[in-house]
Image (cartoon, rainbow, N blue to C red; front, side, top):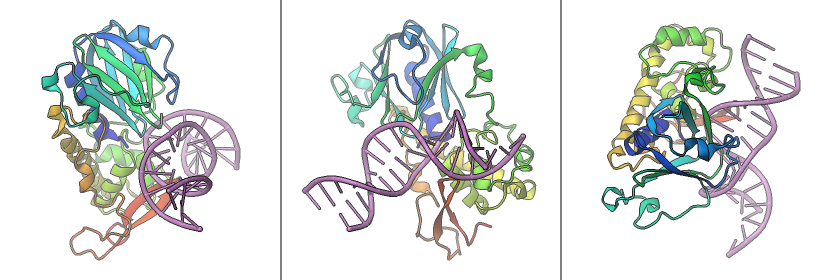
Length: 290
DNA sequence: ACTCGGTCCTGAAGGC
DNA sequence: TGCCTTCAGGACCGAG
């Protein structure tokens, strides 16, 4: 389930592997991802040089020398597998990058090959992900991006900003934080984790978070994201986590997927509960989250 | 304008 | 053992 930290990790892996290189070949085995690949997808990419990769919310943006930007969303099962033509730089930890030609998985939907033989293979068994191409100077007004809220790790995202966004919201805070218009990039896991760290009940109305509770919540959102990026990034040097895995951070979940297990807050006798909010699982401790 | 539920997809896991 | 059902999730879309 790639959320902001996983997407950031994949993005850094792509930057290290492909930035500055020219695309020499594109294979679109399966054009029907969540939305169809754009018209002329392969032709528009082939020959282009990738200037750099960046991330906005859960989207990866690859700026191209052609004036277009390749937009990638990993959905919930999307991965990017990187393989190098040179055996010495091959990570080896992943079966997809063993010696010889990489084995083609039936969910390898798009393969992008660079001039030096480096390939990035987009694999997505549920096809919730997507790729699109748009003019770089129109990205900000592109439908995927125009309604997005602030980046949670930007310095400008402070308690006052969060407060203002929550003030008029009548949904539970859990749902509000999943709303990409409020803050961009959070998903189910990190919302649960941030609320737990801040000691705030996911059931509480978002409007009641504005003010003092937002001051408490804001640094926890930033902290959990930074820690998760660090966990992903720590294994990035060998590109092992350019594939969207959760890195080692999944072992650090304090509430997510821990239903029935004891709360880890010191002195708390609570048990982690699971409830469903807006069709999504929420994990929390009703003892120390108020 | 705002909120909610349904939808897409398929592999994993649980039930009988 | 094996079939069937259910669940997971991000973002969009339509209904209320």
